[in-house]
Image 1 (cartoon, rainbow, N blue to C red):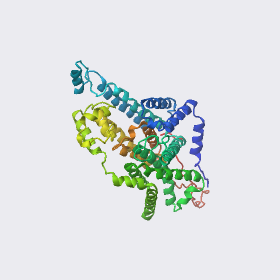
Image 2 (image 1 turned 180 degrees about the horizontal axis):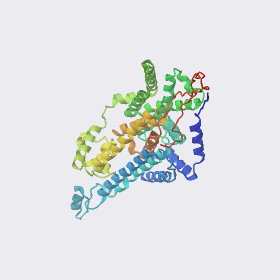
Image 3 (image 1 turned 30 degrees about the vertical axis):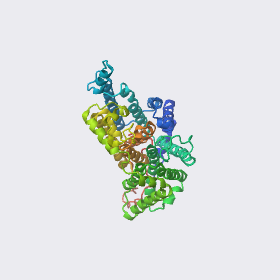
Image 4 (image 1 turned 120 degrees about the horizontal axis):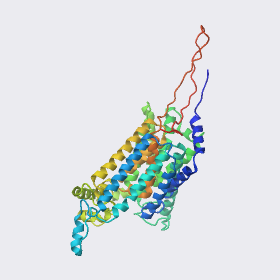
Length: 497
């Protein structure tokens, strides 16, 4: 009987492909990696200068990275990005031309007060919509570069491990500032909450929660495979790759301990719910007792962390109501204002200047709303319903691609990680603003883009037993068939879709 073992073929093929990468392709990758690592440091890169810097980095990456692994699905998503950019550009242009197609009354009123003629615009602030285009351009470039890198399993792992490592480092720096109350390490104290370079506790929580979910997604498939084979979970940390999994588990625990210290209600709860949802999504075991053991184990872990570092979080929940900032009232005011201008809104990037005229006494004076605390509603307010619906359609398509990819490639942790991080970011930004912080947006789109590209790789092959029959000469009895050794391999490594 002839036995053929091809388990190492994809690995060898991937190594050959890596050795043949061109110098420009490698330079593009390092530019991209540097941007992902450094984007959180300058206060979340909210300043215009940093948006410009990272746009240059992302553009260099897009220009230099190889396009040889681009699949038809990725090409369609890239085409969708061009459509989105065209939509943003059209709205920004219509809001900036003078006279505008739907001029705001404030321009004529200002002209009467000043005694001079002012050309009416369809936006609240002159030139702001055109400057705002830098954000969607940066987002499109980051997502494009990530989708170019995604088919390469090695590079994807490098980027995601770098994100987790940076989150642990920045979280540790924030924790030091939190403990010793250093103004140098903690320049902005937000109500006694732990913050990293993002300065805001909610964005910090989403950032740390995303890094934890990446680690969780990397470890979960191995854990489930061990349960399927009735092996102890402790075996994950022995043998080949055991040391790396130990480091990953310790990093995940550290991030999980930091998460309640941010005092972010949604950041903690969404991370816990999504981790449990990941277990439910990945489990395809027939033994229900085994399922409940794993779910119970995850709940016990979260309960332990909650008891260890959740005292401040619990105190805040006791003192702060569900809608302490009056966000629901503010959402209603934004939507009511948008109903008067459903097509163009009040100007991209001009929320801080446009919203005060619609703010009522119901909000009081303590709640700050220089940001809308809901990215989708703020987009409707600033850019109108057509643009918001275009963005929503693209987001839903990407979500469907990730769900399909997670089902087709159940042992690919990077797709699951992208699905979890993508869901966390979209849910949290629906009643807060993490995705409006460029430093986090870069990390978020990187993780999602890597998962999108891997979702178009071939379906994972399951372990199969193939038999090759050896026949004796005519008239002799047929040889007893024997199973051929086989091994599951990661067909995604080094393959194009």
